[in-house]
Image 1 (cartoon, rainbow, N blue to C red):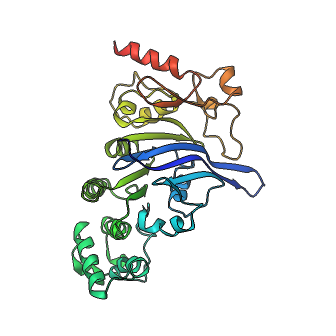
Image 2: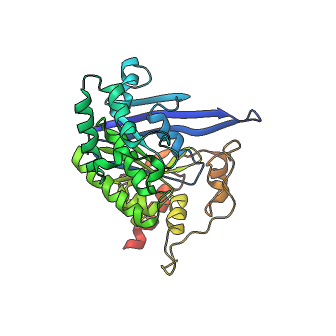
Image 3: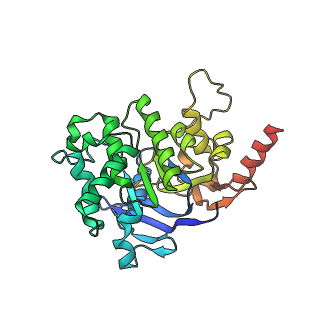
Length: 326
């Protein structure tokens, strides 16, 4: 995969809270997402994952930095910004609140076509709506139902249909299955897989659930207090996490009864985004913290296996992990 579909350059979103403190919700993120892949973005609640995704779909405007889609800055080109809904869409976390409860499903699906496909006749729009419902596992009878008449899984299928009806190239899945029962989650994940293959979609898959992200993703970015701390191939990260924070996340996702020899114990609570620690923002919770960690912020550096890590001791930790494998 070397065809870059979307990339961010030094992308940041900064807020001022009620106390006039600066909150760096997203802090200087540079990454590339390739055509046809699923890029997973993982981190604890409040780390900035959703803020990052909302900037990509033009729901939030960056404080600084660039978002390039197919090589064009979507915030500098008026035409590119206007075309975002036709190229980039979002599937939201909560299907209960993301659908207008006063409108029938048919109207909700047809609305985007009314706005962005004015050349289509009423008959053509209805045909597209029927086809999209079938693709997400619902029949045309659902057009006459209200969201309140559907189960959570059915509502999320409708949300997926709405996101895909304009045939976008890139879809942000923001905690798209976290509000669903586990059995329904599996159905929706398989549906997203099938639709990705059918339409050659590219996903940004945002979640706090590492098991789900590992299953869905080709590459994974680990986010902590607004920054990427580790980024690499999903299989590589799952089998051999290097950054102490990544190790913590994978340890916490282990099932009861699994070997805990690789678990890493983290003390302390997640710092406030309005008052982040100096140096490495993770140093207050890291078992390997040194004076360097508390005074200097580490930059992302590439390791021999291609992953990137923001840690002063990345090379040391990587070498130790390789020695354990031998």
